[in-house]
Length: 550
Image 1: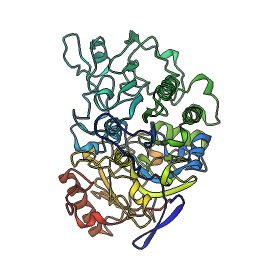
Image 2: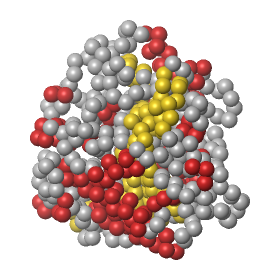
Image 3: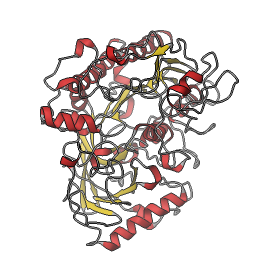
Image 4: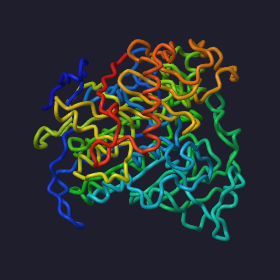
């Protein structure tokens, strides 16, 4: 069960690595759990890291990523993985809840400053909540960005955006809706984008230990084409704009050190949500000039180094063999980095896909997704085979169902509505593809939805759904002529047209209508994962899929 298999799906062959097995852990009810058979889980989420930024996905990348490439050699590389959305906040919501963000109020929003409230409803089951309830120590380090509720001196929620909102906050009060309210037992990080938004201060659990005290002086920051995404907000004295990710790394290492020393038999779940490589590209001084690909290349290289540091710490602590490591990204690469990296360094962060962050085209949401679990000494071959590749169609929403499967938790119907476990098809070579279809949302949320089934992708709107190529001078060079001008929707065959250049909506109207109906059905039923009641989904939902790597 530990070698790469050929899985036949209908008339297609899906080459898929037989990976992480479901653990048959003997658990007991209450507070006592048999911990030794559960794996630790380290989930590292990059910000705006493109498919083409990583060497093991793009042999023409101009940025060295030795640690990510090592992870691919030592584990499993997914080639058809997708962020649920093409921007930060909705993807993070979907990752933590297993539910597409467009299904909830403000599910297309991107919070800034002290924005909120949390998109995660009180009482909703979450990824860390599942693991906490199975006895895991759960920790979140880094960028939260799913919404928080800050209060003013009168105890009223602060609803102002921008610097005025930050200045109204009473930082002596508890902050609601954060990681501690949604399954994590500890948190150190930031409310939103660490070096972009109006609040430049660290949160620890549900407080801001050192509140912002002055307006940021942007004249002290680096100046280059990738440094222009920093708002003139309020900053705390201890907030190092060029070393935020190094602070996050140190906090994650401290968590690992303390946990393994104090509770070596208790499994842990560490969610490390990096600042990198979201603009502004402020690599730490020791990484500046470390590549031949400019400031953003240096920032990508720093992120790769941080991944290596975390992998090394697992080794030093003696827990690497039984730690499931996942590294992925919340969406595709940012416009500024794509434009300038192509122009100045011949580096294509979205290669080989069309589009970038915010777009419904593949470059906006096709992301790296690397998994490693050596599993040495584990029973029943519970491990990811090294050097394997899988072309299964997957989403970041699937992490939640996968974690539930690993610890033997049955998901209720009112949770993880769009999450599928990655384990069943990997466990049985004859199993069908895990996903009948995949939902995606672009920048405008519910107004810019897409659906993917097999090699077919239906985009339920014209244009990119995000960036305005016709109005942004920097993007006009990337604008492609539409093969069917004024069409209300788009239909592409990604096997024959991975660049999404030829809209087939008029050539295959029946297929377009079928996918449109499937999308509408998923919207009205509120889910894509079947409920416990068999037969609740349309017949077309049972179709198998096998998307090939370009």
